[in-house]
Amino acid sequence: MRRLRWAVDGGGWEVDAEAPVTMEGTARAVPGDPLPLGLSRGGRLSRSKQLDFLHRFMASPLVPSFAGDPANGGRGLLLHHANAFHIRDNWSVTVLEQFNLQNFVASLKENASNNLEDMSLPMTVARNIIEFLSLGCGSELLISPESSLLFEIYNDKKGSRGKAVFLHKLQRHNLMLEAACPGLFVDKKGTYWDVPLSMAIDLASVTLDSGLNYHLLLQHNSGQPKHFGGNEKTEAPMSLLPGLCAKVAISMKKHAEFWRKKEGKLKLVQPYDVFLSNPHISGVGIFGAVASASLGENSARYVKKMLRSRNSFNLCFQKNNFGLFSDLFASFTFKAQLGNFQRLFFDLTKFDAHLDFPSGTTFIWGASSLAKNIYNSQKPDAISIRAICPNLRVSLQQQIVGPFSFRFDSRILLDSENGKYLAQLDDQVFAIDWALKVLGSAKASLWYSPKHQEAMVELRFFES
Image 1 (cartoon, rainbow, N blue to C red):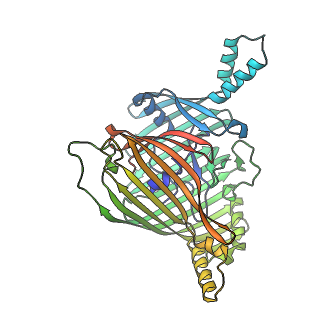
Image 2: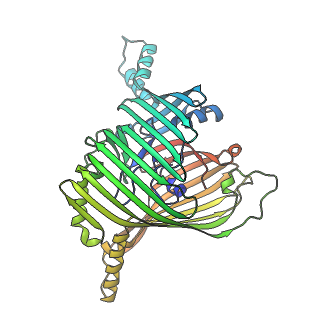
Image 3: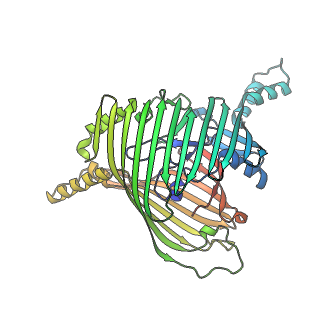
């Protein structure tokens, strides 16, 4: 799920967020400076393939999701179904249906309370089914073992949506070309934004454990961004404004294993997940730099950074709808696991912690400011303390019984009150994972976010 996805990616590049608000099921991160880049991908199946798998192999003809309380502008409880047709060995077409069950029941109750005598019950039910049913169609063509082409069109009640994606695997690289109309983005607060037309070219290197990574991105947005649903009064993120943006990011990744236990496994017993079968303690460190150039209205975001440049040493320039920006970043991931995930009860306990320093130059400024305050015997100011504090996320997974495990994910924020700094949980996500033993390393996850009132069922493969 989106708020657990960082643990999979290892803190390298931002990946798509799961989004139950649309039939597509995903949203891109709003581009930041320096991170997130805003377009990179993690390994995942398309939503249509996930639904088809759940129907065929998990006896789930209807897959539920929840997208906010309708009283607060949400979409409520939704039911999803997919019909896949394999035209040829390398070509498939999928028809998707989405039914808004919560609004359907509310409409029936409203009609019953109004005592509509001029319309029979079957006609009322049929009319409401048509009203709250959305359709979509997707086609995926495997051009070669390394290339695929995906088209998707959705007739959503909030407006039609469509996208085309071309993926190509090069030697140690992934190339992606995408066009979305509109493109769905999600910011750090969980607010969704629609960009009328978004096109991008994305090239990323692939490194498994340690080594040099680089990422090239060219993105063009056309049209003014709008809040998804049209009820948000806040100003749209400036990085989504019309214009062209080019980014390059280079990082060095180092994987370290502090302890691993290979003994203690049950003989002739397959673990529920082969990637979670060895107790270990490990860590990943990433250091990198990002440079970007923007042409158009989206370059206006650099004006605010220039005004705040006293709090950092980054390069920032903006003039006549053209802007340049560069900065450093770093992240550290710590993982600890006990158990082999073979026994029936409590044979897996896993803890992940991720520290993200999104702006290295801001951190350097904060550290030097704190050192100056300490040297002058002054009380450290809150701005300097926040500048050196990383974005911290933690995740805890515990096996309950058999292939089922409970998972909890949360951000940890540092809040100042009366001169004291207290840590508090924020943006929690609760999940139940069902490991699909027969596939080696796969799981179905049901997650719920209380803060955003979102829930979703999805498939994951090859996660550790």
